[in-house]
Image 1 (cartoon, rainbow, N blue to C red):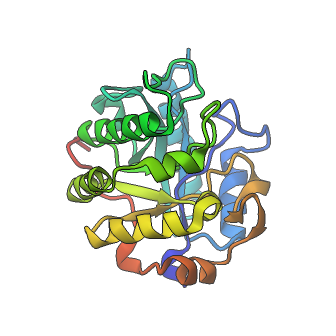
Image 2 (image 1 turned 180 degrees about the vertical axis):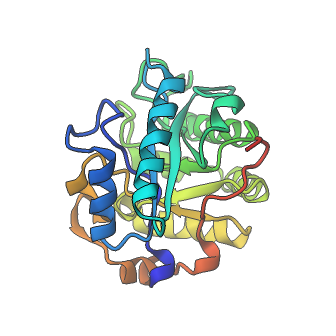
Length: 262
């Protein structure tokens, strides 16, 4: 199972919503204790009134310090950017080039700077969300769509109704476009277990187009590391293989960017 022991979505105290004890060394130590062999840090690069260039500099320095202490450490520096609208990302290609990989949230509809659709029905959100994802793909520098199709923070809308409202032909078009552009979709089994059959079908369709799956816990503290079922109980690495049929060829690993200089 060593080939799937990955977590590319964890936050340090540089993200304002993370725990105070989520220092980068503590997060790395907790990940290693959990058996993670490929570790990625992805702080929020969408919080208002932050100096993103300085955040990137600090994170890179901390990552290099960790790697200098242990040359065998597979530690990557990423970020979590955000689509504020289908044509506006919170970072640009120049900043993206400072990271080993770029994750992007397309579903932060609860934040005031993020555009919501005029039609706030489940079908309206389904259409708008696919536009947000397509906008992220079109940046040319986004590598992973994080917590995809998670709609539990939309006010007064049933998230399961949004899932059922997706037009399957349009969904397949976006999944194929992502696969062709080498943009992965994140799998967090705690999120997927909210609609297991729907998400199992989603990842199966993605894999049929040759798309990649990125594993991420979205942890904001050392104690939260690991893969949970609806926030309770733990998935084992074996569970991930059994429940989602994951194989090494399906999994994302940070590498060359699409459309951005190193």
